[in-house]
Amino acid sequence: GLAEGAPPGQQLRRVAAAGEELAGEQPPYLGEQALAELWVEVGELCNEADLPALEDELDGLPPEEQWGSLLAVRRYLLDGEAEEQRSFELWQPSGEELLAVWSDLLVKVSAEDAAEMRTLWEKADGDERRALAWDVRRYVADLEEEEEAMAAERRGAEEWSQGDGG
Image 1: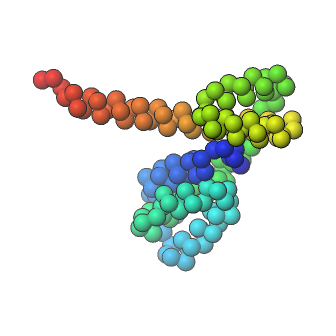
Image 2: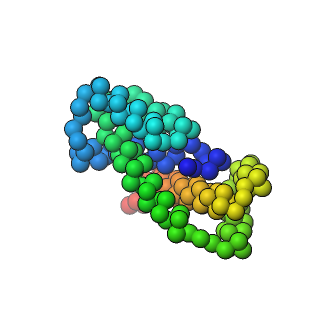
Image 3: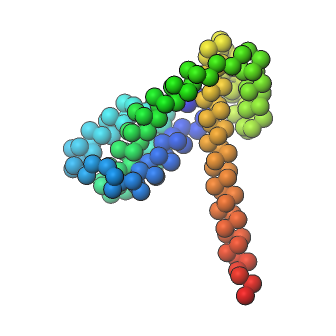
C-alpha cells in the first residue's frame, strides 16, 4: 500500500484519467450492472483511502468513460501491483543505505509530512522501515512528476502570454 503520509488516490487518479483515453482498447461498456460490479471489484482491490479520490475523479462522467477508467485502474492494480511487489522484494538495501535513502526522502517532502513520516519510522522495525522508505520513495516520485507537469504548464502559459513577438 501507499505510505500513510501520501495523499490518497493520486496514482489512481492519473490511471483513471489515462483510462479515459485508452477506452478503445478495452472491452466495450456492458451496462449499468457491469459498471456497478466493476466499481465493487476496484473498491476491493484498492486502498480504502484511495477510493474517495477515485470516485471524485470519475464523478459526473458518462458511464462509458467511467467504465474505461475503471478498467484501466483495475488493470493497473492487478498488473502494476505485482510488478511493484517484485521490484520491492528485489530492493534489499543495507541498514546504512536505507538510512541514507530515508534521509534524502525526508528533505523532499513538506515539514508536516516529514514529521508524520518520522513518527511512522520510529514505530517501525527493519522490514517495515524498508516498506515505508519504498512507499515514500514512490510518493516523492509522484510529487516530483506533478511539480514537473505544473512547471511545464506554467512555461507553456508564459510562452503563450508573451506571444511570438512577430
